[in-house]
Length: 403
Image 1: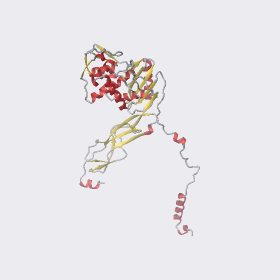
Image 2: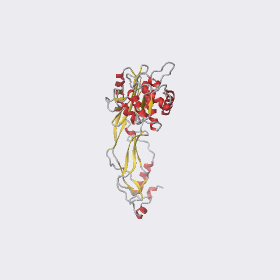
Image 3: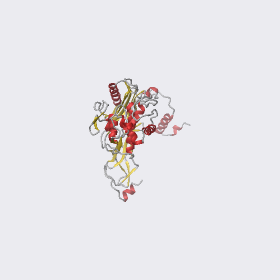
Image 4: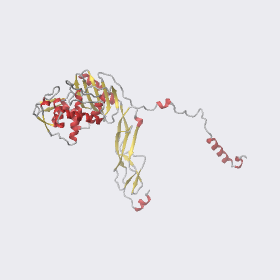
């Protein structure tokens, strides 16, 4: 029996259309092809570190905020660090000061051992006294070996005990390819083992050191008085004041190590850290660092996430105990972030807000934060504000808006 004979004409046509739509599709020349390997390959690819060559044996550039590696050449090959090792000496002293175990004003008495150091020094004399701050400035600015020994003995009781602290801290930081046998980085003496580390480990150390503002203050200083102005501290880093935004961090040179430097600079709000080891000359050390940092900064592009302050979010926020059940939220300021090229499409903006806010609240009250993430790493954040006042509701409002 033909069922369609007993149905109105329009209803019959409708059922036929439903039957056609329900039939399995076998494709046609007009249908878009399924995405294949070619289309998938067109998507943005993660940033890959560049292996650069130059007048160095090892080199590295990292983003100081995220740790992203931008340039990597022989990054895990162990070499002697020379005076760059003093970054660890400085870090340990600054961390003990931050923890309250010692003070900048503490007085250090120079021992015979520290007064007999060679290499770069401030010519400390046995029995002289200086403050911890004075010796730290001599260490950080002038790379003074005698100041390093004096500080180590004062903090730990002996150089050997301080070296134990250095290696312990290196392990804590994940500097797995480092071993320290001195507090200054001079070449190993008879029956002594050399200090060894990598550009990767030194970048880790540099990231930790710049958390202390004093470190950057000293490393960006060209000259400073010492011993009541009778001696002048000179910074051997020739890039200070010449490369835009550069404010550190530590140079080094010995015959076995070559010319080395851990440098850091800020441009357009982005801080990078570079490390070179094994350069043949002082000039090459500066030239190669300039190349590395310039490449690193140009590997980024600025991306405007929030064009202006006051932009309203598309989703409202729930209100408890107010005249209204929902309210609008706005961004408190504009936001531009630096993103590695080809990673712009991987940015994620998380609006971190409570499920509801409780009235009363004034317009402009901070209720949350918008956080920009790349691969789970925060690149920036701004406050989220109430776009309007939220007066407290009466009993009828609270009854009608209760959910």
